[in-house]
Image 1 (tube, rainbow, N blue to C red):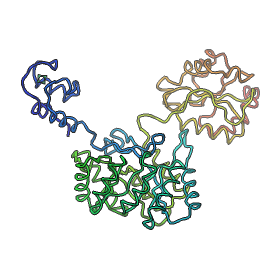
Image 2 (image 1 turned 30 degrees about the vertical axis):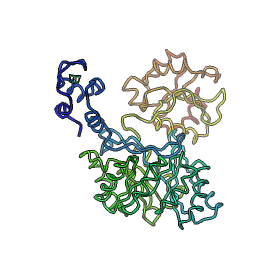
Image 3 (image 1 turned 30 degrees about the horizontal axis):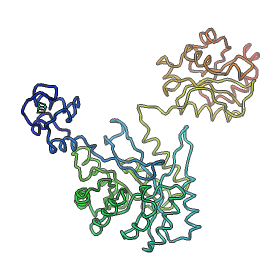
Length: 452
Ligand code: SF4
């Protein structure tokens, strides 16, 4: 819970000296409570008072980062239970679990397969981020070699072993890239915590239930290891989802610090479709990391697509850069189309233009990510904004004609746009699915169309 002014007042010196810039300690406490002042403004604040305030200001779910700086994976620091309340900030990382009982060649092939799980969706590249490397036989040398290979290939890692000595061997060469260590349990927590502290790597804590988990995180945090990820020990969809939800509720609603860390989940289903369903359920509620065995390409695509949808801020539509894009290989006689910079609109238009087999230039107007009719209603996709975008583009140099196609939904602006731009304006189909027929019947035969 955030501290009230009265809570803060209790830890201030109560001398009312005024050196903080306000006449009384209570007035200063009110400023602190509303974040209009910082505790440093009081020269007499004790270390205890500072610690109390710092603790209250800490996020309810700690931010934990994993992996090399260049491709750092960040999880935690979420603030809401439901996406519509605000947004979810840090997309769930997805890891493919790979055991080390394979030859180096087989391991390399598996790592390459994971690295290739990158997909271009509505202008964004989404991917599977991690490998969860599992110690298969307790052999430190074999595990260290596999970890070194994955690290060398640029993969972010979760290192899984019950034996601290095996993890220590793997960490020797790669700890600077902050792999996630799995896992501290009731039996191993002291050795694992020491290892995490010495290597400055994040650590998974696994309990047999939420009570044991909270007890372990308290002990581990007390010795200075605070970059923790929670594994409640539950397996299977129902039990795991229940624990993930409980952890999130306790962290946010009760500010329960021992469970105020990102949580993770393992996909345990055997059927490939069930695996995707289970993994996607954990993406929704509330895993910071999902680990799945032998993920296939189509499964990865389904999961990263679901994740992209869930972690897109509903208040900020996905946008693409305004400007001019070529679809196909257009030339000086190719059509010029205009649309908005809402990603879903643009990529729908692009796909329909490609399907029409008529290469085209597309002028993308900055509508702050709004779709055609929404932007038109909000005065962001008007004759004026389109004429301005056209004038600022180099389309006049790219094409030899002066004809542009606008979406059918905004036919009413055609006259004014013609006036402002000096270009002939053709009214296109209301839906871009009609582009093939439009290109065939109207763009290629403008004179015939004019008389029809
Ligand atoms: S400087 Fe500190 S002790 Fe003095 S009035 Fe402000 S809060 Fe109180």
